[in-house]
Image 1 (cartoon, rainbow, N blue to C red):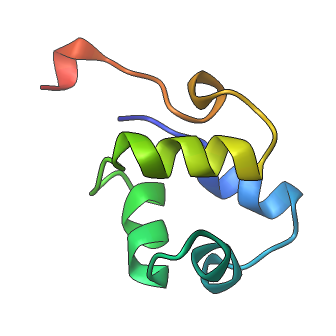
Image 2 (tube, rainbow, N blue to C red):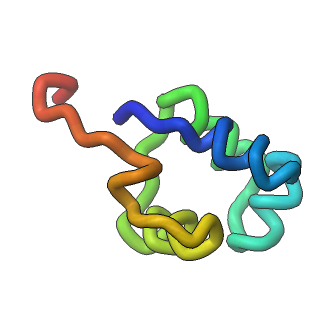
Length: 67
């Protein structure tokens, strides 16, 4: 799943560890999402969207051909 999470995080000027702490996940989880190795749960996707005051679709782009 493509995502610009790293860009959103950079705009907010926060580290992976800071974002992870705020969302209650590990820094490794944030890293794995940013590099596309891990698709977050729906709950985590909502938490990210809420944190950045945007929609889930602004962070995550679903491509059915990637399955």
